[in-house]
Image (cartoon, rainbow, N blue to C red; front, side):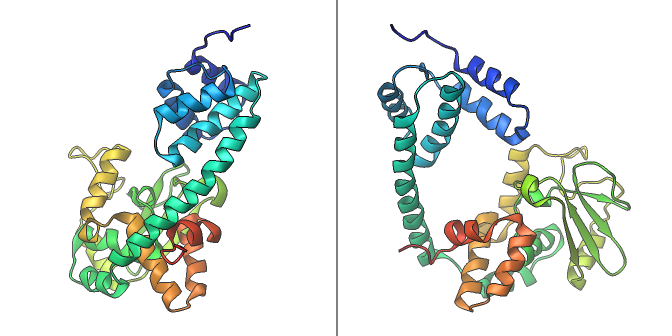
Length: 278
């Protein structure tokens, strides 16, 4: 008997309704994937694989879609063994592709000393943002900070300034479900001077719209990319940090970046280590 045609969006909604312990980011991801799948996901596994191959080229994206399709098929009591095998085979391609990209990047990656020289020539918001990248290995989202005198009890990222230090209280970031609240202290004199020079008032965002409102994520990321040294962006700058520490056998400071960035050592060594290309 042929499988009944289905609406993938409805299947996703049903899954999310049944499974309440899913993060907001995952809900958003699953919802977007559901909207982008034009075929019947409850049909035969070879057909699903064929349709997925036609729809998506990138193995990372393909694996992401497969994760959801497998969950939805299990929820609807459909077989998943061939899809799981296909996903496992993709992992080898993903690892190979990642190592290839890291190997290519290693040839072009600047040295940390070059970035530090450029940092020291900066002022204002440029110095502040790049200092945080180079010191703590932060992601863009971590730096979406609100200036306050006392930390409120809600899930935003805050910046508190005293005469001698700045404290970052980071609640909302990529891996906050795993690592929880991060608190970072900055005592760099130039950082404090440049921050005071911005003239921020209570509840001002470090980077915001003209009317003072918080920027959308995509706009914020674009602004941050433009501010970053040579427009490298936070990911490339983090790879520079890791390359420098590995070259100097400084694994103690890699452990510090594990905490300040909020990511596992395993992820750092697999995804950000440009020497992991063989």
